[in-house]
Length: 326
Ligand code: ADE
Ligand code: ZN
Image 1: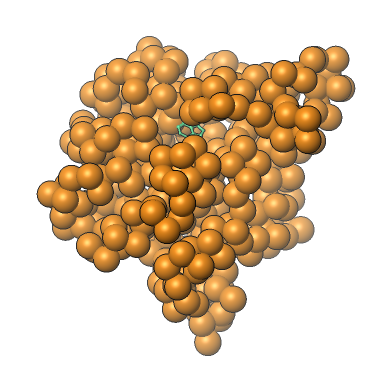
Image 2 (image 1 turned 60 degrees about the horizontal axis):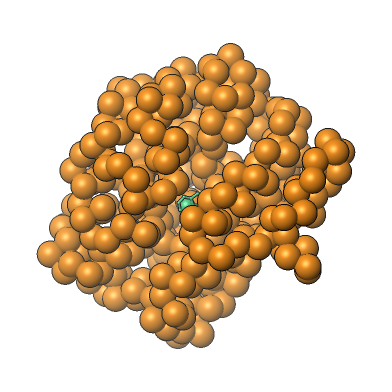
């Protein structure tokens, strides 16, 4: 079985509901409104999902909470065969965008990642992510946290949140700051926004990866542009099906995008919210498109090539992929 590489995972969005309920109990917080009667996160649409996500995040109050979360999340990923993961980290939730506080959260998260690497053999790197519906001014503060902690562990900068608010150009200053600090760039687009949102993110933010990006399929000239320029899509098919952007895996454009030469990777986005795991993504893609081991090995290779980590880390992970292919 080919080891899996995951490039699009929100750390808070990967928090198991039981973990969040445990924190809420410890802190005497009432979060009952965000769960259904089976204990799962409950939401009606994308915008409600963002609200529930932020409500759950209210329980994550200390660096140690984030360290526990990091360990729990990576244990789950490793159980799906993931050997390398990049996770989105938001200083908005970790210390309110204060650089000093953010450093403390980052230290704790990295310790959690080191423990998970020791216990489960999974390697993590971080992508600092601003949140679009919090606005461009807050994004600049987030970018400053990113620039101050850029290095061999914080390897990227991105933007998530409500794609329908504002436009990518509003965030160009933040992306420029991150680029100048040596960070690699990605942006959520083409999930709720149409093809124009992808075109704008590529042009105005000069990103090399797009989070989702699948709605590019509605404009074949854009699809050609993505293929020619080698922009990589962080595709999260199960998330898109759960949020009803597409009715089924069979109707999802990932196979057509790949057929047209676009580099696609596979990720889970916010696993407990969308009931995704990397194992389930692979199984559903196999059922929908009859993809075999060779296809998944090629996707893992594309994903590793598109990872933002340094060459030594890539070489080490590449050996794991090669060993599985042999
Ligand atoms: N934040 C967490 N998950 C997200 C998603 N799927 N789209 C945009 N922002 C998000
Ligand atoms: Zn996402």
